[in-house]
Image (cartoon, rainbow over all chains, first blue to last red; front, side, top):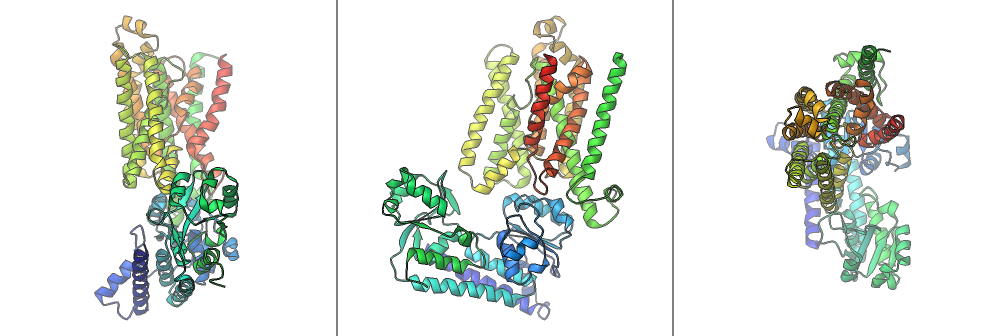
Length: 307
Length: 328
């Protein structure tokens, strides 16, 4: 797990470096075939669609809370002309017109705000909307932002499109610096076996495919379901008991329900009072506050290790 | 009021309702377009966005809704006559369950988006074959009651398969499949429209030519046999064609319930006894109602969409109850 994570991180750094590099060289090295290929690769999204190389978007619709937050962090919030009704951060985002949900979005409502770029979450549910928007002449960028590496990739991609790779660099660097600080602070401490309960009925655990497992790792824990490649999975109480976690992470209401439920008393961590309440708003999405999220988890798992 | 006059009135009302529904369906949407702008954009005149909205979003959507409604209503009208059962409709006969299994299996196997309707169609055809086989095992000649029971059983079995498949699928697969099972014409393209139009033209035409035979079947098996009709063959033929017609709509738009059950009852009292008129009138009424239901589905909570199948059921139940009271 640890090894795979660091490989991913290295790959992400290489990717970020490559796309930043070619964006900087854009224009002067445009005659070089390898530079063109690099640009084409960097402009291919998670659906395999590409953006026109000359696109400078002025009217952007962002249908993913994580990317909406990012546009504001990159100083391009004033270019947003549409968001989903769930994009509530930062506060300025509320002034952008809400166009409904981000899954199976209303294509006509999107076309109605006359965007020159639509950013979608790359779920199979959005494949049809991306195809329709592109058929109507509107470029789309579909990004899957589920892991920390994908967050770094998304920042680099948006920075390149906004011709502001410097700010993108600053955002990634600041997140990475905080993550590294948390990692260093928890290094050498015993790694608590952690069960992250995301839902009560059915019981849903966070799995290895989620950035939350990466955050637990950085914060000095070890997700007991980190070996499962899915972002989340249904589990049974008995299986959790068999894996015998040292601590449980859960949202405030979910934690209260767990402490009160007779069935969960079978779990040692519950009996010993180690159900820890996470700030679900802060850790909810892989965004610019990833570093803060890791720090808040480290404070829970290793009190005193980090200020 | 003379019979001929009341018939003429019925056709006038039905054609007027379809025309009105089409106009409203084209004119209303989240982006406000004046009638003249909308008309120009429909003909390809105006800015790119308006043209895309009219030609690639609203028009195929209205056309697909019309075809789905028409096909389901014609299928229901033919099945109710053939099986002499007021409750007969394509969905009760296992078509929807089979189609849903086919679609869910296609989604679970990570088939590309375009393949899911083919899976749905295959599943529906499989269910029809299974229902016929069960009905035949129940006796030498398929009894309409056994056919209905076989449909219900196949539907229940299909439900179980779907629940097991969904319980072990990733969340976005599950949501995709659930949305599809609630019915929607939001993903309409001209390719969908063209395919379904072929099915409606061919299968609908065949049902209209079978209509005199269905009239005889509706009298009862013995009477039909007495009149020289091969009851088993005629019944099976009408059943298979009507089911295929419903299966094609499921492939194009998912499960849109209640249309096949309610619409034939709405028109039967006024279109008379002959099934040619009942099937044709049901086709028109079904088209108008599903266009209207889709208009409600996409405007009631805009810009979010409501599932079309839920709207048709919500509207269909009160209509059906009112009809039952009148018949009492």
